[in-house]
Length: 263
Image (cartoon, rainbow, N blue to C red; front, side, top):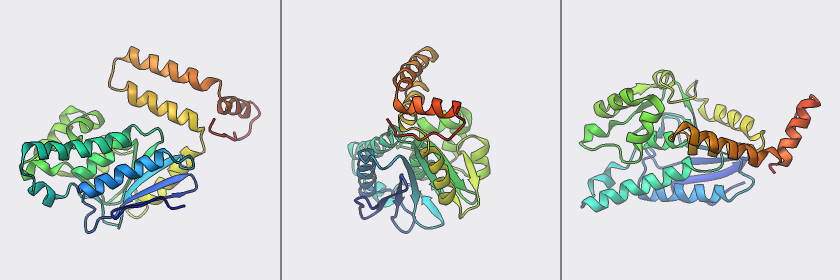
C-alpha cells in the first residue's frame, strides 16, 4: 500500500510495516526538502492505523545517509539561518524519536553526520557489516547540529562520544555494535531484510503495550529513577485491563499464541 511520497522520500506499507526510504542520489544527503518530506512521511504514518512498525532506510546498497547537504551548509548567510537549519533537523528527528510506533533504522551503508543523527533518533538499529559510522562535521570546521552531541553520549557514553565528535573519525559496524550504538550487524546486503523480519516480530505483539512501553522508556530514561518508575507504573495500569492484556494472559495459560487486536 503506497503512502504519499515526495521527490526524495518514498513511503509504503506492507504487512503492517511502514517502509520509509531516503532516495536523494547520489549519497542520500539531507537537504531542507528531504527533511521536510521525511517529517511529512512520519506525520502520515503516525495517523495510519495499518502501520504498526516503521523502518527507515536509504536507497541503494552503499549509503544509508551520508549526512547533511554540504552545498546548503555553504550557502548559509547568517547565524539565524544556521540555527533554523539545525532546528529543522532537530524537530524532524524528535518527531521520529517520539513516535508512538517502534522505528527501526535499516542501515545499508555509510551512516555519517546527519545520517547517524537520523539513525540515532530511531528506537532500534540494524546495520550491514560494511557500514561506516561517524560524526565528521569537525573536519569541516562545524559540529553536529541535529542531535549528535546529545544522543551519541546517551548511546555510547560521554568519553567515546566526545572522541568520535572531536576527531571526526569513522568507525566500522563491529565497533558500533561493541559500543551499543546498533542492535545487530548482518551481511551487508541483508540489513533491510533482517529489519523487516525484526519488525514483523515486534508487530506481532499488542499495539497498546508497544506504545506504552516505548513511552515509558523515552520519557523516563533521562530523568530520576523514581520519576521513571512512576511513569512505568502509570503505563502498566493503562494496559493491564485492555483486551490485549486479557488475551495475552489467557493465551499464556492456555499454551497458545495470542491473537492481539491492538486494543
